[in-house]
Length: 357
Image 1 (cartoon, rainbow, N blue to C red):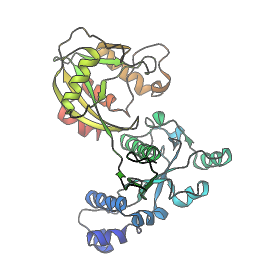
Image 2 (spheres, rainbow, N blue to C red):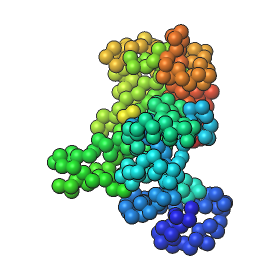
Image 3 (tube, rainbow, N blue to C red):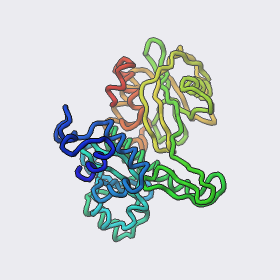
Image 4 (spheres, rainbow, N blue to C red):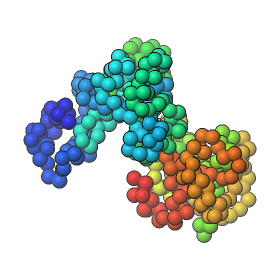
């Protein structure tokens, strides 16, 4: 916390004593949300400020898009590994050049993610032994941590990948140079500046007006037994509602009404902002786009309830599939799970966000 105070003092006009003594703030929750966001913006914009926080920072560790996770402590507060700067330097010397800024925690710690690349076998084994963790497939890791930590993993991987994929200017092809936070790259020749962004996606659970059945779809890449919600990228100039209506029409040949937004989720494959919605349509025959889908069906409440129970009991179905072929849905780390589970619970739409966040 002490490393954050000097920078906050200048930006917010507060002494260390006044900052700690702000009304309503406890011993841990010293920095308010607004103060943290403004401090984070300062770190993104000022290289010296961002680099000055490294020695006191906390670090996630990635190796080629695989985060360091304690698999044997999945779904606990200990699953995600945070290392100190000193600890990271034992295994990877190029921390400033391979680190991206993530956030500032409630207790004032600046948090980063470091991409260590392909470590030597000896170094990787030592790191995994010292931490009791292993570099884990990101799709699996997202379902081993809580909702907020999944967002953190997603953000970290996307910013790492964005820096890798924008090493050269999109306008003139010359090399680009990143800032300390990893949130901008400037062309060394023409000066064009690039920033990371997310692609908007509409994901929708279609139900009948009586809420007795829903439409779930299966893509060829899904593991055996898995069905999910209809989803697709927004076209240029589309609203979210237009995206949802178009995707449903394209994929299952049906027109929906009453599109209602529920909540959103960042998703790192490939780097999307998933906007979760409900929509209604009368029960009717589905006309599947076979170029996009392997199958699509109306499912009853009983079938969906059983599918939810299967994935909650065994989240690994998402990777391996169900040998029996029985229906399951995406696990709790996915926005689709929350749309489906709250439909089963009949949670009023305006309340779902508060249950998720």
